[in-house]
Image 1 (cartoon, rainbow, N blue to C red):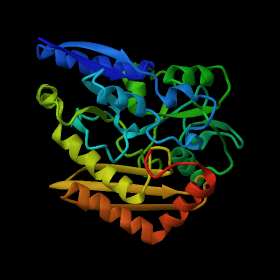
Image 2: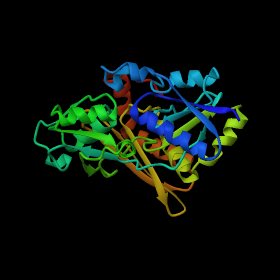
Image 3: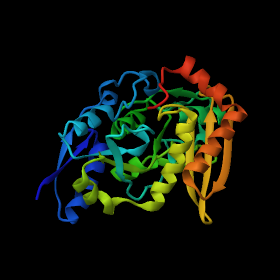
Image 4: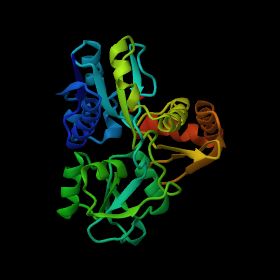
Amino acid sequence: MATLRLGSRGSQLALWQANHIAALLREQGNITSIEIIRTTGDKVLDVALAKVGTKGMFTKEIEEALLDGKIDLAVHSLKDLPTELLPEFTIAAIPKREDPRDLFLSSRYRSWHDLPRGARVGTSSLRRQAQLLAIRNDLEVVPLRGNVDTRLRKLESGEFHAIILAAAGVGRLGLSASVRQELPAEEMCPAAGQGALAVEARSDDGSTLAALRFLDHAPSRKAVACERALLSQLGGGCQVPIGALAEPYEDGLMLRAVVADPRGGEVIREQRAGSHPEQLGSEVARTLLTRGAQEILDRVYGKEASVPQQP
């Protein structure tokens, strides 16, 4: 039996994710190996993500290895994957999604409402920065890069009063000791696809696609398809101030979305239910644009950050 070669970034979280998928594949009788691939996002650590301005900063080199046949599949955090893939690639499976929310972590404070004026909060995300400052514009939001464990060490050393991280990553690594608050989506709408994994393969690799089919979780695929349709319609990538969360509702989905000024000024929120995921995402995006989201995104693309229309 041929070995399925998985491509992954080398961070602790990325390797956890790759090993998780590899273990599930082995349970089905497959032989697996993991190839570590360093991406642009791993190399540029001294610049805020929103200012890197590189398309597919966490995926480009992995997709190149996939196209060259050096690996058979790639395991990504889905929120890092561009909304439009080259025709040579396909998302072969989206496993069951983990908690999509963000977490407030601190050594001293129970919630972001308890932080003193001028407190330093670490995050690398314009989306998180925008929503945080919309509620607490007296805080100092400081760029925070590095792996999850690196960010936690900076918190514990006293560099920050608090940091904000994705619940899924913290949970997967078992690093919940400093978690103080699960942030409700009404206040901190997550990134599109947050908490979900994407298993990417070559579109013409029938044997690998067949081997991955059992991993796909239909409800998770529908939810992230809705969120990514919104992101695509807005012309946004993973490092712009756009949030989207689709959750089961009656016979369809309830989509909650936000576009926010990174400086903490204007915040535009929209919520709607529907039974067709992509259609719902596109409709909510168009509503956001008519309500002023285009002006916010134009300011971000033109001034705040050098971000292309896709991540």
